Length: 239
Image (cartoon, rainbow, N blue to C red; front, side):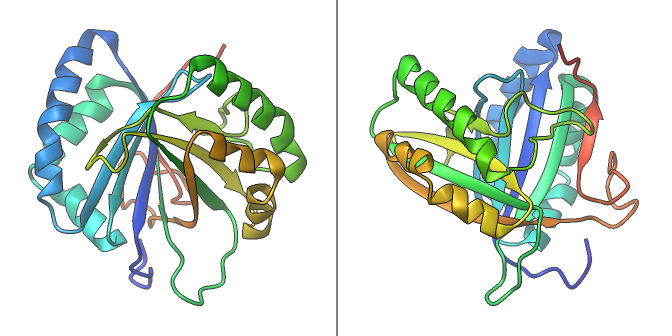
C-alpha cells in the first residue's frame, strides 16, 4: 500500500466459504475474536451475512483509515486466526479493500458502491426475491461491472445482496447491503437515481457510499494478485 494513500474510512470487502468439517471451530473462534478486534485502534465494525443467490458468505471489516486496518492485519492476536481461516477453515476466500475518497479527490474506476438498508423488521423471502428479480432485470442497462469473486469467476448477477446482516456493533434491528462495482462514479450515480434503486426504500432507510480501490504493492500480502487489487485463497467450483 503506497505511503501516499489518503487516510480515509476503509472497508474490507470479502467473500468466503467454510469447509463443513471445520465450520463449528471457525464460528466459535469468529465469535471470540469480535471483542478483540473491537478493542483495536481505529475499529469501526464487522459485518457479515448470507449472500442471496450465491454460494458465498459476506464478510466486511471497517476501520478509520487504511493504516489502522493495516495495523490490525499485523496484530499478534489476529495472525493465528487469519492463517487458520485462509488455509484450513475456508474452502475459498477473496478480499478487496476500498476507502472513501478524500475531500476534493478525483475518483476514477473501479468504484465500489455499498448501499445499506436499515429496517425495523426483516422482509419476507417473497418480498426480497421479487425485489432481486427487478434489480437483476434493470441493473444491466446502467452498465455495472460484472461481479467478480475469485479471479475469473463471477456471480450469476452483477451484484450481491447480503442479509439480514450480523454485525458488531449492531446499528439497526435489521440491515441489508446491496453491493455493486462500477467503471466510474457517474455510472454508479445513474443507477442510484433509478426507479428500481429507489424501490429499496420499501425495505427501510437507504444510504449509499462510493469507495475507491486500495492496491497493495507487489509482495506486500500473501495471496495477492499481480496488480495488487485482490487477495484470494482456495478455489470454489462453479456450476
